[in-house]
Amino acid sequence: MRDDLHHDDPGGPAEPVPAVWTGRATNRAQWPLAVLGVGCMALGVELAVEAPWTSGIVPLLMSVIGCLAVGLLVLYGTLAFVHVHVRIEDEVLEVRCGHVGLPRRRIALENVVGAEYVPRVTPHEWGGWGCRWRPEMGTAVVVRRGEGLLLRMGDGRRFTVTVDEAEAAVRVIHDRLRRMTTTHDPA
Image 1 (tube, helix red, strand yellow):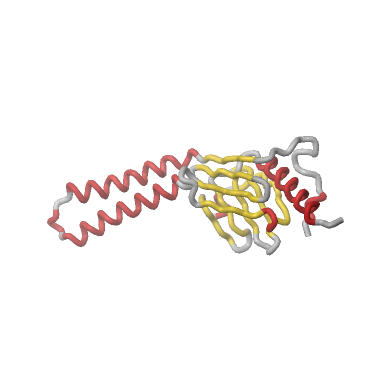
Image 2 (cartoon, helix red, strand yellow):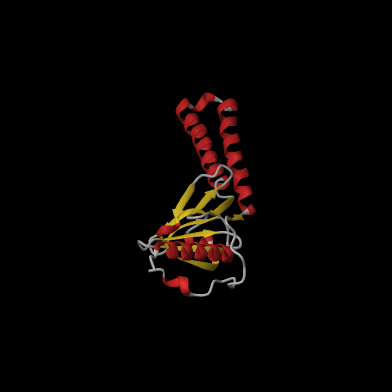
């Protein structure tokens, strides 16, 4: 079932595997978008406070609410995906996004049948930054262009995340999967 466990790990067999592995990926290019979100919110407040009511309340409310909503969405969308934090513990891989740690995804390694190093993950191939889903590719958390980690689940689903030092993460996952296989096999 776990066919890729017998292949050599990407970093070589001599490197020790840590008890807890953590990694991150950061995208500083999204900060200007966060500033744009703040600007939209400021415009909404400015319209609410300073705008003349001569054109009627409905158009003014629509403008204020629209600016505030767009500002909040852009601000959340950028700050939530400015960076990603990946943590691999005993039997769980956890992915947390942004400063608040939301969205968050926990994947039990018992559901994983393979892990692969992906040298180049791009927002373009996934349709942008953030939490993504493509029918032919699975789900992903993409915060920047670069190396990433691909997990293959036993039910056929795939999960990709951009993270620095993804080769080390693959090595740790392979080690955990090997341990789980030897502890569950009665041989």
